[in-house]
Image (tube, rainbow, N blue to C red; front, side, top):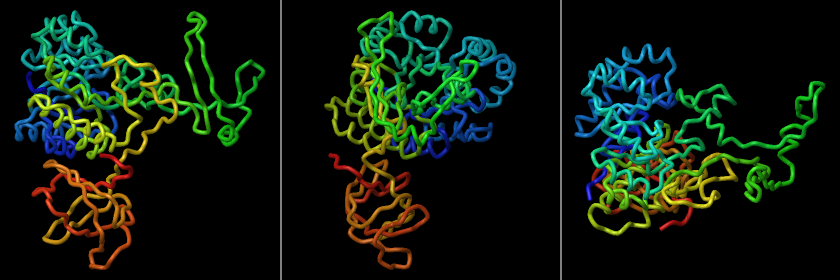
Length: 439
């Protein structure tokens, strides 16, 4: 069993540092204008990208540059010009999906490693073999594959590195090839501007017809929100007896809202079959998300390759993050309800909430930069790269040494008693409050 690479998202330099502190072997970040994450990408210029690549290499880690849009002619025209100064910093690979851009890069920089993006939708061994013959060094497999399909590809194309997504948001379309956002909001998902229209809540509105026969609304949103909950069962005429449920209540209806992928329980199986890299989705997520997911999957990989049984508590640890409900995705086949969240489009609060970061520590006190409200007696957990520590602070004071009944929220600085068994380094640590009982 080889040890898979743990690949984490890096939307900013802080995300990059956090990912490496918690055990990532590599990070991926988007090339401005040519990747599918326009927003929350601080690597917006050559200087920032170069600094990120250099920092990764200083730490002995890998940096992959995402360059995976579906380019129209204007972007093809400028692509090589914009890519050339980035390549001077030597990213460890380009993550690409478009055959035309791949051809241009292979012609000009034949030694540059290229990983095939999940956007290219590789779902069978013949496709993987085709790309191997084109000089691609790694294929990121489509999210729509089952474990036995992945194993078959691994066995039939042993010379190709394979990468598999194990955590993060899922898309209703085939690994993100979607026109819904572009159609409804004129923001093209394949150009990096997806508005997640599939996750919006849709409400039925009372209507009539105008003189041309078009539908016009006859009720207001406030009237719709007080409507009685409804259940609708849909049947497609060419598939009699095959029914699709849709539910609508005061929140609306969410008919295309996928749950989030969580496959930490399958890390051992993926490692056993020789998957080279396990990937966490989430370049627009918080640094806390990066810390928590990287920590959990690092532990799962180390346990699997060390011959230890899977630790079920890792699944509970990931419940600490806000999520849309979790699913194994397509790794094993389930009924449709296990893939979709029909009741709420936004993420649900996790079982824990970040309440602050540590700014100072002395013999008696931890000084906290408060992010969310917490109080003496709350069950707390300190998340650090060296391990996590649960405790409860029975007292709290402000910077002047005056007792406080609670920390009000962002913008406040408080001190709590230093717990025992505190890790030596608190760099990249997070203080969380436990909202629900968990192991």
